[in-house]
Length: 269
Image (cartoon, rainbow, N blue to C red; front, side, top):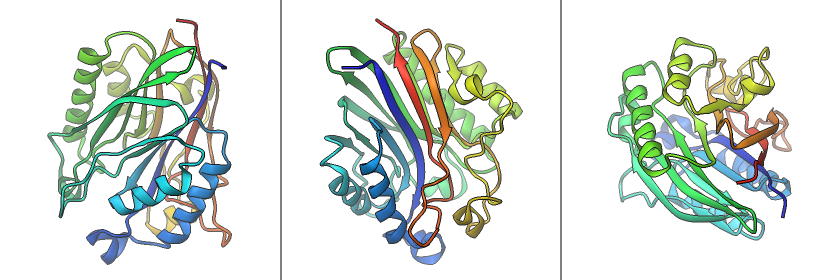
């Protein structure tokens, strides 16, 4: 078994089956979800985390469509009449004791959701294990709430996983290179931003209305919002890619964000 893993975070923007989806956020969701499942099944991914799959029914559909290739999956059940976290994980590697923690501080539309983070141990058979935290933080111009979200993540990592190989991934809603980005990296000093490590002079936009037609449809902004942070001493970062070719047969981008994919090698424990 190789120590190499291929891991991806993707904000899928699947709102069908929710009240906001009915009124404004739904856009060719069935077509896009079908293509997302097809792309996942054809991929070399070992682990993928999807954000903004809001309906548990659609989480289950994605799991059913991919379970022949991705044996392990997990999401936190949404209570009746709630939006939920929007998070679902698919994995070829064993997920051990996954947990969900809801953010205490959310604002505006996010306050109607149960945004938070999934944390789990991931086993690589015969090799070792690593800890994975997957999240979608407060959106928009609400830095106070977002910093509170990061503080909850920091507490979780400090108390539950103070050492060993770790990965933080997801849509952090923090623009790469901004002052808030500097605060993020200062808050997690044992981590390195995989994209910046390999592509220090490239913007790495994961939200780009100039190139992504679904992002343009939703009037999204341009920025690097999705991240793969890895502990510095534990991972050899082989590649990091903003994946821009996930489109439907009708040339519709599968989401308003692009996937962020990394190939990582676990340094011998």
